[in-house]
Image (cartoon, rainbow, N blue to C red; front, top):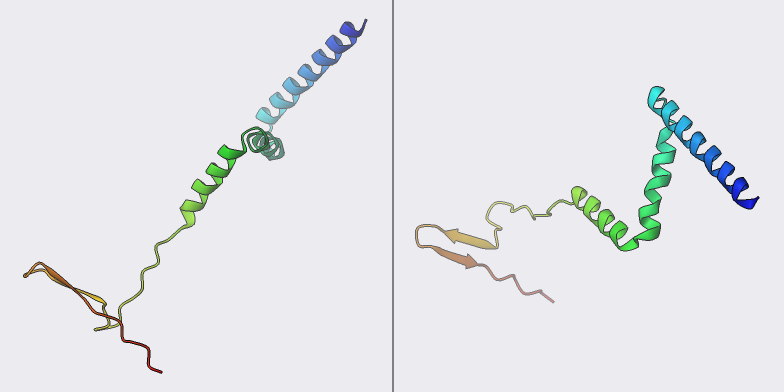
Length: 96
């Protein structure tokens, strides 16, 4: 008897999932985004290492390289291309 109840409940849930999926495909009103987000959370729950790695890779899209701007003759490194030589200027000692 219990197998029949679980079988009927399983068939009803399957039909409900098929009906709602078909409805979302025929009428894209934006209601399916919540379901997609809910399904995406499964990765976080069952594979947290991969979820953290995915977040780190997404954060790399917003990174920029910070380069100090040189004002006139304040360049710390001068490159002489003719002599193939680089000169590094020492910073001035702090004055007390």
